[in-house]
Length: 181
Ligand SMILES: [Zn+2]
Image (cartoon, rainbow, N blue to C red; front, side, top):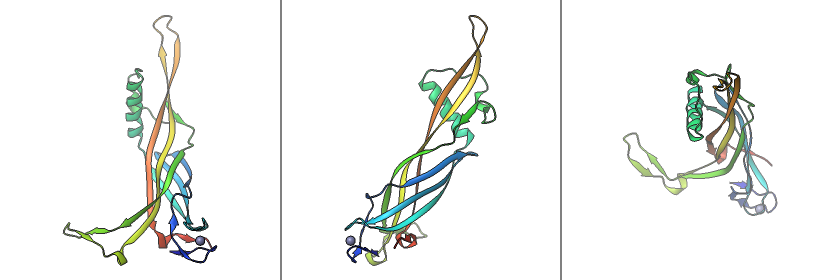
């Protein structure tokens, strides 16, 4: 707990007061960047603590190809032979910008699992509270290829946008967050 500067009481955190702010990009088969979170006091809404979470969330080319396949099936689009080996050097592209929407989370650890696999209740005074965030990161991969038209044997360029959505979350103990005052 931290003291609220406005009323000087030890304040509880209002996890719904702020949304996490993300600065993310997709490159080299990973979503990377950071998510900035702020915890405000429940009583007066003063900003008390902040944390920056480093993100390194892997999405392999294999994952992207399987989603491309699923999207094509959904839209009843026939992909050409050999699409399984497409890469970002040839048929795939992305503008690298990643949208994120999420919320700040709170989790109290009330039980622990012993080495023998027994779940035990932690006495309240030793329970730890974790704050963090969870949300969806989203970006688009565009697949582009050519097909030879049956009718006049000319080449036609086809494109298909594949929406990639990934759930991202992280947390740490409130005591590890930075004090803002
Ligand atoms: Zn207050």
